Structure formats: structure tokens, C-alpha cells
Image (cartoon, rainbow, N blue to C red; front, side, top):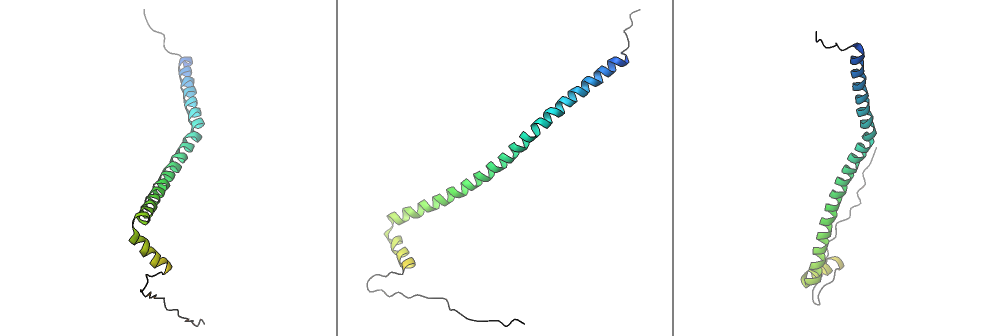
Length: 110
């Protein structure tokens, strides 16, 4: 008679306990790494925000460099800027300035 012994209650309990220990270990590791995962996500968001800010600043820098280049090499642009901002004129020219009309309207509030 070659009958194999039937697994007893202790074998079943041992398997259940090993499964529970493995599950507890996995949950412990997950709980241990959860703050790290959250910090990683926060840092990724911050990195995306900073990269967007960097792109905006690079665009501003590119525009400013273009303006500087124009002012260094284009005398007509410099003359136009001086005329517009400072109100200068060449000899013999007349400068006409248009100002907004100032009104002093008051409303009666009941």
C-alpha cells in the first residue's frame, strides 16, 4: 500500500501563516516606500514646473538678446527709440505730442 499521507491541519496552517507573513512583508515594504514614492512624485512635479519656468526665461533672454543686437547694430532703431522714449528730434524737425484728454467727470451716487 503506497498511499501518501494526507496533508494535515498543521500543513495547511503553515502555508496560511507563510502566506500571511509574505503579505505582511510586502505591505511593510510598500508602507516603508510610500513616503519615498510621494516625495518622488512631488519632485517630478517641481521639476516640470522649473523646466517650464526655464523655457520661459530662455525665451525672454532670447528676445532681450535680439533687442540688444538690434540696438548695437541698427542706428535707425536707436534713433527711433530715442525719438519715441525721450522726445528728441533732429535739427529742423517739429515734435508733436498727443496727450490723452483728461476729464473730471464725477458721478452722483445716491
